[in-house]
Structures are given as C-alpha cells and as structure tokens.
Image (cartoon, rainbow, N blue to C red; front, side):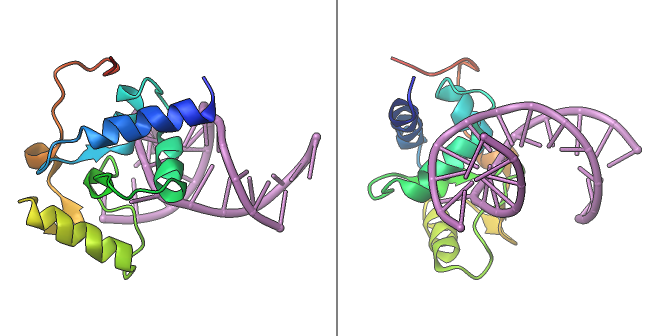
Length: 110
DNA sequence: GACATGACATAAC
DNA sequence: CGTTATGCCATGT
C-alpha cells in the first residue's frame, strides 16, 4: 500500500472517533491496519488538510496534547474537546474516562 | 545517498 | 513524576 492509501485509512479512522472520546496515535495506526506507524499518523495530521476531520480527538498514548504549549492549535484542541464534554486538565485528558473503546482490537476496516 | 527531525509508542530504569 | 534506548518511516536538508 502506498502513502496515499495509508493517509486515506488514517483519515477514515480519525473521522470515526466518536464525539466526547479521544484516541491515541498508536491506536489509530493499529485500527488503520498500520501497526507501529504512529508517527505516520502525526505526519498525516500535520500535512493533510484536517478541515472536516475531528483531529482534536487525537492525543498521545499518555492522554497528553501533542501540540506545543502556547500554540493556537493547542488552545483550539483543548477548547473543542471540552466543548464535547472531555475534561482537559494541564494539557491532559483522562484516558480511562474518555479513551475510545473499540470493540475489536484488530484493524477496523470495511 | 547520508543525516537529522518529528502532532509517536513501548519498555526499562 | 523523570530519562534513555529502540523501533518506526516520510520529509527536508
């Protein structure tokens, strides 16, 4: 599979994250059928046009916001998350509470 | 083509 | 809470 297809699958998974939940980069990579390629997820979110995508529901495996402190994008992410009922404190969210619980641990594909 | 970098993860200490 | 090491790979220099 090429980079475009990978990006497409990643975007597909991100678009399926339910409001009020968050998913980690590695989790998204796994669900996209790309285990171990968490960095690719980050790269896609940085390059691809994220308009229309719930990119703000993507955080690190520790539930922390991956964007640099003080950046406007980070502020926007926190704002959007809290607007969905996700509690953000000190740039972190409680994964036990808001982590995206998928039924199957295996890739989520059509 | 070698090298550094990054919206990362996991493990070990 | 922290740091270090290792795996990962597309991009930019």
